[in-house]
Amino acid sequence: MEAEEGARAANRSHEFWAKTAIFIVLACWVITAVVGFFLPGDQRGTFGDQFGAVNALFSGLALAGLVYGILQQQAALKMARAELNLAREDARKTKKMLDEQTKALDEQNQANRRQAFETHFFELLKTHREIREDLRHSNSSGKKIFASVIIDFTNNRNSKTRAGVDNTIENIYLFNQSILSTYIWQLGSVYEFLDSADYVNMGYSDKMHGVAKYQSILHTQMEEEEHIVWYVCLKNEKLKKLRKYQIVSDGPRFASIKQIAINRLGKEFADSLDLPDLANQSEPA
Image (tube, rainbow, N blue to C red):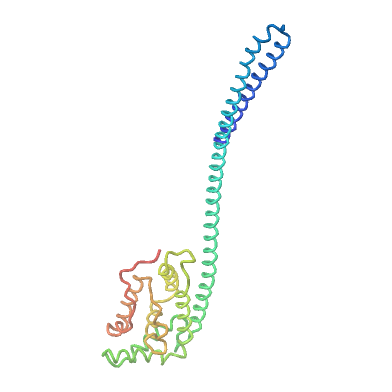
């Protein structure tokens, strides 16, 4: 803007001096013509020679006009450059504004997608709790039935060999299928939902960070015995589809769960459950 104002000021200065020069030359020509008109005839010849000086002024005026034209071109170029710089600055500001608007829109879209995802996720957790509360086993109900299932497991084991342990574990689900089937498949659907989500489009750096966060929320809803029964049931071939969902969070919690499994079931049985080895992982941020 300052450059543009400077160019306009220079242009006005050039116009002033050009008009002044024209005025002076014309005034000299008019004065000379008037004076020559009133001179006696014998003096007009001499005065005519002096009038030639006025012609020289006209030649100077032509040169001045040429110089003025050049100065005008320079002023026009300077003004054009100023306007170009101004246009570039406007374009830069416009681009910055559009980038900021695009970023804000992307963040809003990510927030909307995350909100929709979390709404569905917490609905699944609610369904999970409701199904768990409706569970019945012997004299137990709700989340207490998982301890009862583990007691049945320990009472029915008849071998400490790996094959015998695996056979006993696989049969546990069959013995309790009518009780646990709906619960196990619904819990599997929660893991599937978490595994299939597009976390990057929700603002997470990668999939693992998103999965870890929501798995951690899920695991806080579950008792230690509940985790153990989940892994007991996964040993059954009918549930092998659910084995693909990798646990990527809650290392300290699963270390505690594994120790409980060892204490309740024995090391051979706990090792056979293939509990996730997350001892070196920390809680997700």
